[in-house]
Structure formats: C-alpha cells, structure tokens
Image 1 (cartoon, rainbow, N blue to C red):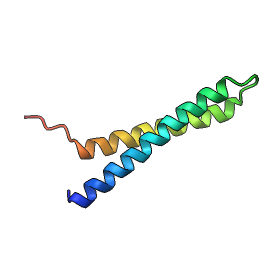
Image 2: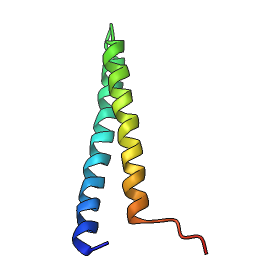
Image 3: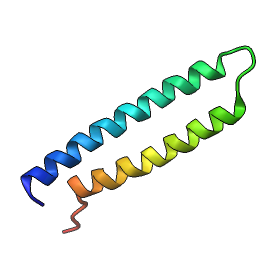
Length: 68
C-alpha cells in the first residue's frame, strides 16, 4: 500500500467514525422525544451498523492481523 493510499484510508476512517458518533447522538435524541419515530430510528441504526462494518474493513486494511 502506498503512503497516499494509507492517508486516504485514514481520512475515510476518521470520517466514518465521526458519522458513526453523530448517528449515535441522533438516535439518542430521537429516542428521548415524546413520540419517537421508530422507523427513523431503525434506519439510523441500520446505517450505523453499515458504518461499523466499513470501519472494521478499513481498519483491517490499515492494520492487518499478522499471525506469526
């Protein structure tokens, strides 16, 4: 992996982590409303799971598990 590719992955990883945190905050805020929109919460949680998987994929590319 080139240095540029590694930097691009690190930037993408940081953006995904930030979006993941933002979704967590949004979910909590919606859940605390008097009549929460359960469909919206479900969609946000699904997006959050997708982001978690992408974060893991990029993390594995940047820091592969090397079994010696």
